[in-house]
Image (cartoon, rainbow, N blue to C red; front, side, top):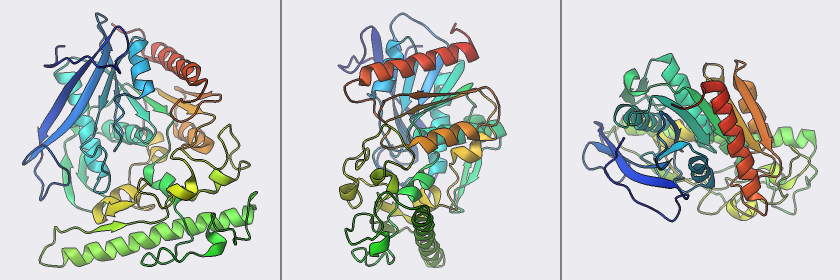
Length: 402
């Protein structure tokens, strides 16, 4: 295994090497929804981090739909612990406004195929960190089904052959949530009733309006009303998206697209009421900071979207990448690691992921006091605990590496 270029980085653990390379493959499409690659070529930038002079036939593969995590503490620490680790970026790194989940699954399959066929790794472990958890589970379910992909959630033809989606030998879900469309719907602000007038918000559904008579601790009746209103808003946007897409397909430019903005995307009662899903997270904060600010800030989930991407990525009823649905299909060993102070993926996501796996070759571990990114005073100890659990799980389920 000798990829073309080896680059030593300050972010590489002592005794390890970081090898940067690209996976390129051809894909015919009506238009390009990402920069780079050129023509019909898709390019995925990858980082292989591995111990020097410690060969292994096992590779832990990370991919997140949009995030670039080549320098995440989890990735570096796994390599320092003796594992060979690949972080492969999808084609949509840093830009999810046009992201199609079916294409991300294709990207993950191509990265795994390259690692298997070119680099010689015979054992693959999928590692889904945060939003990569549901991607890993869904990919594995698709790979085990052996049918490949035939179309996107919007109904556009998109063919990925089953042989380009090899299944993994185990799945790790690390600080993960159940799906992008479900967690987004749990966060969306239901006080916006008219998407064309986002500044006009219904006070009784606006968590950040002092005039809202419903304040923490929230009553069960209010929570039920709030959650139902969140789903209703998601479905209203979806109905509008489908109408716009139908009009485009009936026009002289049937492959056209439309971009739009979604306001108010960080309004989860759990951020403000510590009695909801009690844990060690700090009330009044989320993983991006003050949720009242993030709610309309530039980095919220689905802040900018396109029609087809909405249906594939954010639609409560149409998006397919869902770890809960996939959990009943996968047959390989599965590890779920949650963090008790996670300010992004709250406790119910951890338990739902574990419960979704139908077989008994699964294990759940919660790192007490750990945050989403393993930051804080005891972050190193929390991370070391998680790494130890992962190593023990892989050795017990897959055996020692060759």
